[in-house]
Length: 348
Image (cartoon, rainbow, N blue to C red; front, side):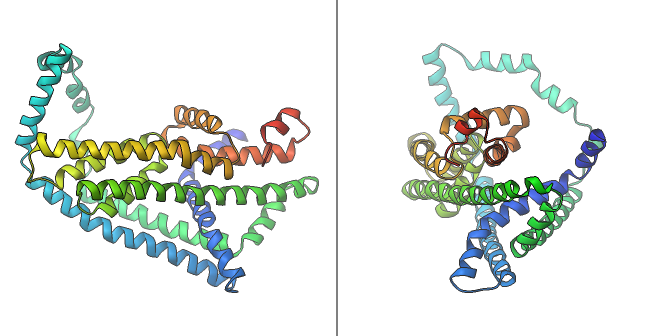
């Protein structure tokens, strides 16, 4: 029975991802729906519709801003003289090699000995490479189905959350229903605060990145700053991706300048801005969010994220904190008699 259940869950794993995404969207929209109901006396149905329309409007607006910016930066990259960059990088590398006592030839010999290119290309068969059109059509189809599914489920989670909760409680033994209701209420409140706090964290990074990019004169600084701050959702790896993206777009925004004397200092300023943003995020924003939302010490969160990353990769790192918060609530409600559980879940 357990094996059959695991097999079924594996087969419907895409649906599970849609349900999780719908839950996250519903939790993000939940404060807005409550505000519309309590302050403006809007019904559940219209409140859910308005909240989802706001989400779609923000998503569409960001997409329409990002696509032209991406097209413009791609054109700048295509027009950029990469030979000059290579010459400048060779000069810089030569100076570093002289200082460190290594040589470019030694690095190239190591790369050749590793046969990286042969190993990578040897695994790829021409017959297995799909056409670009098929790939794009597949991605568009999956995105369309996924978006519709997530919005559809989110709407009913916002509109009929009490009915869904009653349905879940019908499968719980009567002796445990009171604790289950308390757990569900605490979980919804914790996760709502967590995701709202995550939005605040991204906003703080967005301000720091935007000021940095405006200072160095990067084109479309606001859009670039927003998307690089958004990468921070991915713990530890996300900030590195954002830093590389900001550095690359800063280079393409100053194609007319000398690389070593003018562009490299600007990239250095960008890295300083990223470092300041990460220091504020790690020592101010994250402790505030975690202590006020999931009621956990930053050291706990660090260990949980690293462990989830080692076990389940980037996806595990992204869901580690909310999953940990849910687990703490459940343990507190059902195992309160245990002294360790009582100490561990104190404050929830």
